[in-house]
Length: 282
Image 1 (cartoon, rainbow, N blue to C red):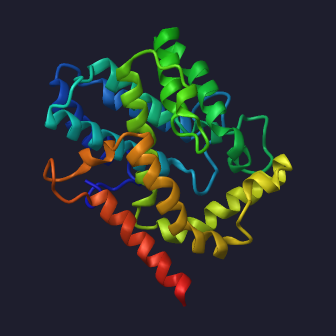
Image 2: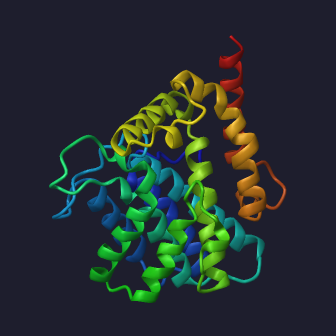
Image 3: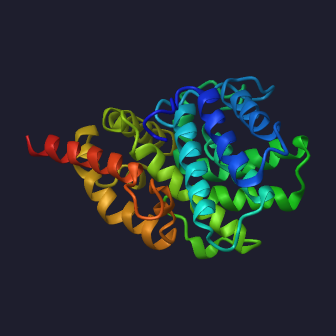
C-alpha cells in the first residue's frame, strides 16, 4: 500500500480506506468514508468557521493521511487473519475519525495569527481531544462515542502512560493501539522522512520558544543535524519497544502476504534509518 498510494492526495487515500472498509464490513454504507475524509479536508484546509488551515510544516495534512493509510491497512490485515475479537464497524469508524483528527491540535483559531501550529507541540494531543469534543457533536456523535475517540487519540502521545487511559472496552483499546502504531510507522516509513527531520526540529524550536520549555522539548538535541544523528536511537530504543511491547505487536498485521510475508512499512522505516546511519558516519 505504501508504495502506490499517494499520501499527498486525500482522494487516493480515501479510495484505499474505502476498499479496506468494504472488505471488512461489506458495501452497506458507501457514504461514511468519503464523508469522514470530507470532514478532515474541511478541518485542515481552513473551511471551518473558527479555524485556520494547518500551517505546521511537519505535522501537515499529509502526515495525517500517512497515518490514516497505515491504520486502515493494519486493521484490514488483522481482519484477514481472523484475530479475535472481531472489530465492529462502529469501532472502525470511530478509529478512522480519531486518526483523521489526531493532530487537529496543531490547528490555530482564526484569532491566533502568531507563529504556526507547531507552537502547540507540547499540548497538541490534549488540544486534539478538545477539538474532537467540539467538532463531533455536530456530526451526530454521542458523548460516549466522543470519549472513545479521545481515548484513541491519547494513544498517540509520545510520553503517554497507556495504563492511565480508561478504555471503555477491549475493542477501543485495540483500535487505540493500532492508531498509535500507525502514527509512528506512517511518518517514519515516508519516502521523505529523512529530508523532513530538519523541519521537525524547527517545530520543536518554535514550541520551545512559545512555551519557554526548551529543556523538555530540545533535550538532547543541539541542532537539526543532532536530531538526524540521534533518530536511529529513537527508532531502536523507543519506537520498536513501543510498537512491539506497548502496542502489542499490531504492526505485524501489515505483512503482505499475511501472516509472515515482508512488512513494507518496517522495510521502509529501516531503509530510512540506514540512510541516517550513513549520513552520521560521514
